[in-house]
Image 1: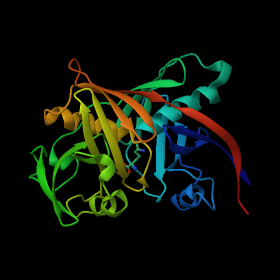
Image 2 (image 1 turned 120 degrees about the vertical axis):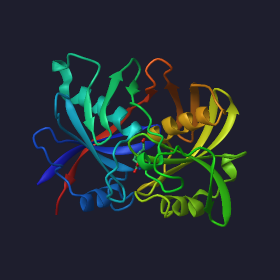
Image 3 (image 1 turned 45 degrees about the vertical axis):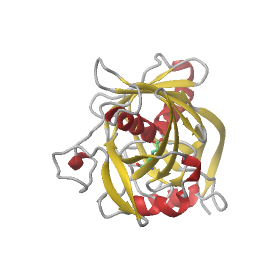
Length: 282
Ligand SMILES: N[C@H](CCC[C@H](N)C(=O)O)C(=O)O
C-alpha cells in the first residue's frame, strides 16, 4: 500500500501534508509520523499535517503530529501550508480564497493572498496561567515578566497561549543563546504541565523583532508561526513593541498584528510547495 504526500514549508518550518478528506481519523499513527519526519531514514519534516473533513460548519479539520509524535493544538506555519495544499487539492473546483479550519485551538481561518502569501486569523491570545497552562503564577493571573529558574539562571518570562503554550523571554542577542542545551530544559520544565514552546526575542526596533525558537515536540525549527504571534503579544504586554511588527526568524519574515479592533492576532507569511511523493509501507 502507498500513501501520497506533498511536502510544504513555511519559512523553512517544514511539513508532510496528507489528503485525509475521506476519513475522520488520521491515516498515519504518531509512531509512523516519527519515522517519516526523520531526516535520514524518512522524508524529513518538523511534523505531519492531515487535511480531514470539516466539523461543525467548518470547511476542513487540521490535525498535526510533531516530529516526536506528540499532537499540538495548532501550528501557524502549518496552517498556511494546509491552505496552499487545499487549494492544490481543490484545483479547478476551488471557489474561494478563505478557509474555515477546525483545530484543537478552535476555528482558524487562513486566506490565500497573491504570490504564495497566506493571511491567517489566529484567533485570540490566551493570557491566564491556567490557559497556558503554567504553574508559574496562580491560575487566574497573567504571566508577565515573571522569574523562572532554568539552567542555573533566572529568566524573566512572559507566557502566552495561541492554543499551544509559549514561554517568551527577551534577550540582548538571540545569536548568543545556547538553544540546544537550554531549549529542552524550558520545554520539560515542571512549571509547564503540557511542556512548552520557548521563544528568545531580541528587540531590534519597536516594529521589528528577531526570534529564535525551541519548539515543543520538534526542537530547533527555522520558524514558528504560533511562536511569532505569542512573542508579539508578549512584546506588547511588556511595552517592548508595537501591536504590528515584523518578526525575523532564521527562515524568514512574518508580519504579525494584534488588532486593536477585535483583539485577534493576524499573521501573514508564505507557504511553499516543494515536492510530492509516495510513502511505501514495506
Ligand atoms: N511544536 C508546536 C506545534 C507547531 C507550532 C509551530 N510549528 C508553528 O508554526 O506554530 C507545539 O507543539 O506547540
